[in-house]
Image 1 (cartoon, rainbow, N blue to C red):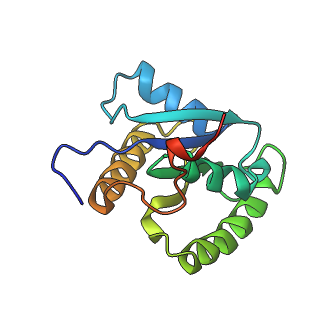
Image 2 (spheres, one colour; image 1 turned 60 degrees about the horizontal axis):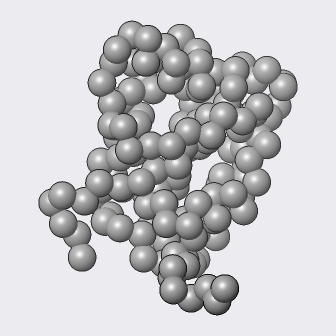
Length: 146
């Protein structure tokens, strides 16, 4: 059930060296982008365990964005290549589980690309908004006994 007033919750994993700095540049430049994202700053996009993404979806986030350095610019030399391979495998697994491809997205944003970061966040938010609230994998709040 998609509603016009639905605002998705999006978890964003940002590489410390590039994407987080790009987000910071967008902020200090006062660029407008949706505020319904939560940011987790990670040392490298290659350090993101696919289980983190599944846990976000299970905990009620409607979408997840992973953003790292451009290929060839990784502070840790090959971390973004590791992330790209993991994301390709995860994307296939998510589709197998029946989760729409647009719910989990990957992007490259460098430290000097504040405007691009703003555009990526806006694009991801709109894509998830069209998909509607996350229904699969979400734990029911009342299912826990305690």
